[in-house]
Image 1 (tube, helix red, strand yellow):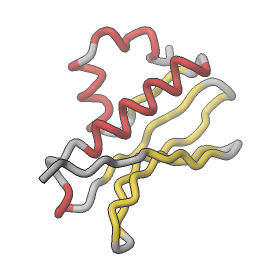
Image 2 (image 1 turned 60 degrees about the vertical axis):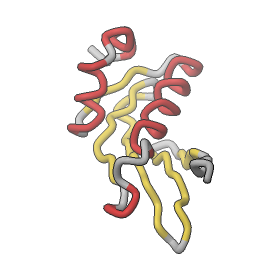
Image 3 (image 1 turned 90 degrees about the vertical axis):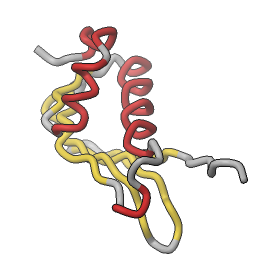
Length: 99
């Protein structure tokens, strides 16, 4: 059986928003953020329901956020421990870190 394909959605407003993956039966994986300036996102939480952990969902959320940040010229403050760890693993993202 093929692995499911998960679509990452983005909900955004002036104050912040979230990236999410709908997992069925009301379950969602999400990564939330706040805007600390028009071009700065403070990532404050990433969560995936226990039943879906290990499926790469959190990484999908981060990958989408990185792609959006690059496309929009946004800088990132990785307050969430998962996102901070991903920045440590990906030095090629260093240019996206907010000063």
